[in-house]
Image (cartoon, rainbow, N blue to C red; front, side, top):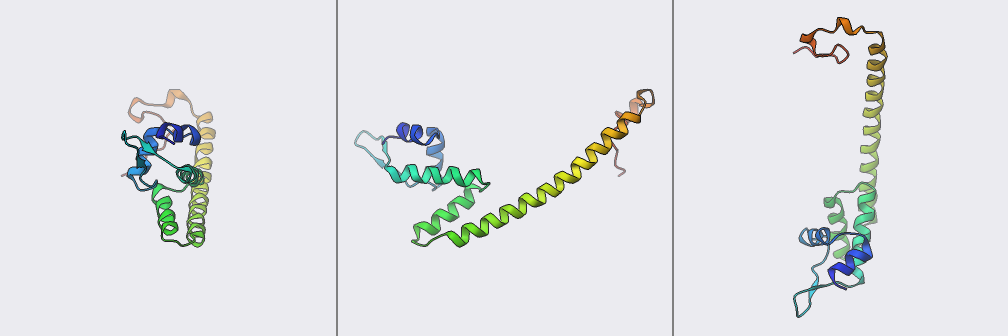
Length: 134
Protein backbone atom coordinates (compact mmCIF):
# COMPACT_ATOMS: atom_id res chain seq x y z
CA UNK A 1 0.00 0.00 0.00
CA UNK A 2 1.10 3.57 -0.57
CA UNK A 3 1.67 6.08 2.20
CA UNK A 4 -1.78 7.64 1.83
CA UNK A 5 -3.42 4.24 2.12
CA UNK A 6 -1.34 3.41 5.19
CA UNK A 7 -2.35 6.74 6.70
CA UNK A 8 -6.03 5.97 6.14
CA UNK A 9 -5.68 2.42 7.44
CA UNK A 10 -3.98 3.52 10.66
CA UNK A 11 -5.47 6.97 11.29
CA UNK A 12 -2.00 8.54 11.23
CA UNK A 13 -1.22 11.35 8.81
CA UNK A 14 1.47 11.00 6.15
CA UNK A 15 3.79 13.53 7.80
CA UNK A 16 3.79 11.46 10.98
CA UNK A 17 4.50 8.30 8.98
CA UNK A 18 7.49 9.98 7.33
CA UNK A 19 8.65 11.20 10.76
CA UNK A 20 8.42 7.67 12.19
CA UNK A 21 10.43 6.41 9.22
CA UNK A 22 13.14 9.05 9.73
CA UNK A 23 13.35 8.22 13.45
CA UNK A 24 13.75 4.51 12.72
CA UNK A 25 10.42 3.55 14.27
CA UNK A 26 9.08 2.34 10.98
CA UNK A 27 11.20 0.28 8.60
CA UNK A 28 12.12 2.14 5.44
CA UNK A 29 9.47 1.58 2.82
CA UNK A 30 10.28 -0.05 -0.46
CA UNK A 31 10.14 2.36 -3.38
CA UNK A 32 8.12 1.71 -6.49
CA UNK A 33 9.54 2.54 -9.92
CA UNK A 34 7.83 5.94 -9.77
CA UNK A 35 9.44 6.69 -6.36
CA UNK A 36 6.31 6.20 -4.27
CA UNK A 37 6.73 4.46 -0.96
CA UNK A 38 5.19 0.99 -0.75
CA UNK A 39 4.28 -0.46 2.65
CA UNK A 40 3.16 -3.94 3.63
CA UNK A 41 0.79 -5.03 6.40
CA UNK A 42 3.70 -5.24 8.86
CA UNK A 43 4.02 -1.45 8.59
CA UNK A 44 0.38 -1.04 9.64
CA UNK A 45 1.02 -3.36 12.59
CA UNK A 46 4.06 -1.29 13.58
CA UNK A 47 2.01 1.91 13.46
CA UNK A 48 -0.73 0.40 15.61
CA UNK A 49 1.90 -0.72 18.12
CA UNK A 50 3.46 2.77 18.20
CA UNK A 51 0.08 4.42 18.75
CA UNK A 52 -0.85 1.93 21.47
CA UNK A 53 2.45 2.46 23.25
CA UNK A 54 2.03 6.24 23.08
CA UNK A 55 -1.48 5.88 24.50
CA UNK A 56 -0.03 4.35 27.68
CA UNK A 57 2.52 7.14 28.03
CA UNK A 58 5.58 5.71 26.34
CA UNK A 59 7.94 8.09 24.62
CA UNK A 60 9.28 7.54 21.13
CA UNK A 61 12.62 6.62 22.73
CA UNK A 62 10.87 3.97 24.83
CA UNK A 63 9.12 2.64 21.75
CA UNK A 64 12.31 2.54 19.73
CA UNK A 65 14.05 0.58 22.49
CA UNK A 66 11.27 -2.01 22.34
CA UNK A 67 11.44 -2.22 18.55
CA UNK A 68 15.23 -2.68 18.65
CA UNK A 69 14.88 -5.62 21.02
CA UNK A 70 12.25 -7.17 18.75
CA UNK A 71 14.39 -6.55 15.65
CA UNK A 72 17.24 -8.38 17.38
CA UNK A 73 14.95 -11.42 17.48
CA UNK A 74 14.28 -11.21 21.21
CA UNK A 75 11.02 -10.93 23.09
CA UNK A 76 10.78 -7.49 24.74
CA UNK A 77 8.28 -8.41 27.47
CA UNK A 78 10.63 -7.87 30.44
CA UNK A 79 11.80 -4.57 29.02
CA UNK A 80 8.21 -3.44 28.40
CA UNK A 81 7.21 -4.41 31.93
CA UNK A 82 10.13 -2.38 33.34
CA UNK A 83 9.08 0.62 31.24
CA UNK A 84 5.47 0.29 32.40
CA UNK A 85 6.53 0.08 36.05
CA UNK A 86 8.57 3.26 35.63
CA UNK A 87 5.61 5.00 33.95
CA UNK A 88 3.31 3.93 36.78
CA UNK A 89 5.77 5.28 39.36
CA UNK A 90 5.88 8.58 37.44
CA UNK A 91 2.07 8.75 37.35
CA UNK A 92 1.84 8.11 41.08
CA UNK A 93 4.41 10.82 41.80
CA UNK A 94 2.50 13.27 39.60
CA UNK A 95 -0.74 12.35 41.37
CA UNK A 96 0.87 13.23 44.71
CA UNK A 97 2.11 16.54 43.31
CA UNK A 98 -1.34 17.28 41.93
CA UNK A 99 -2.99 16.43 45.24
CA UNK A 100 -0.69 18.93 46.99
CA UNK A 101 -1.44 21.54 44.33
CA UNK A 102 -5.17 20.88 44.70
CA UNK A 103 -4.95 21.51 48.44
CA UNK A 104 -2.95 24.68 47.92
CA UNK A 105 -5.38 25.99 45.32
CA UNK A 106 -8.39 25.22 47.52
CA UNK A 107 -6.71 27.04 50.43
CA UNK A 108 -6.09 30.09 48.24
CA UNK A 109 -9.71 30.08 47.06
CA UNK A 110 -10.96 29.76 50.65
CA UNK A 111 -8.65 32.58 51.76
CA UNK A 112 -9.71 34.79 48.86
CA UNK A 113 -13.33 34.72 50.04
CA UNK A 114 -12.30 36.44 53.28
CA UNK A 115 -10.16 39.13 51.65
CA UNK A 116 -11.44 42.63 50.99
CA UNK A 117 -10.50 44.03 47.56
CA UNK A 118 -10.09 47.45 49.21
CA UNK A 119 -7.03 46.06 51.02
CA UNK A 120 -5.35 45.09 47.74
CA UNK A 121 -2.61 47.62 47.02
CA UNK A 122 -1.23 48.35 43.58
CA UNK A 123 2.25 47.35 44.76
CA UNK A 124 1.21 43.82 45.66
CA UNK A 125 -0.59 43.11 42.33
CA UNK A 126 -2.95 40.62 44.00
CA UNK A 127 -3.21 39.75 47.69
CA UNK A 128 -4.57 36.27 46.96
CA UNK A 129 -1.35 34.96 45.39
CA UNK A 130 1.45 34.53 47.94
CA UNK A 131 4.73 36.32 47.25
CA UNK A 132 7.77 34.26 48.15
CA UNK A 133 10.56 36.15 49.85
CA UNK A 134 13.95 36.12 48.11
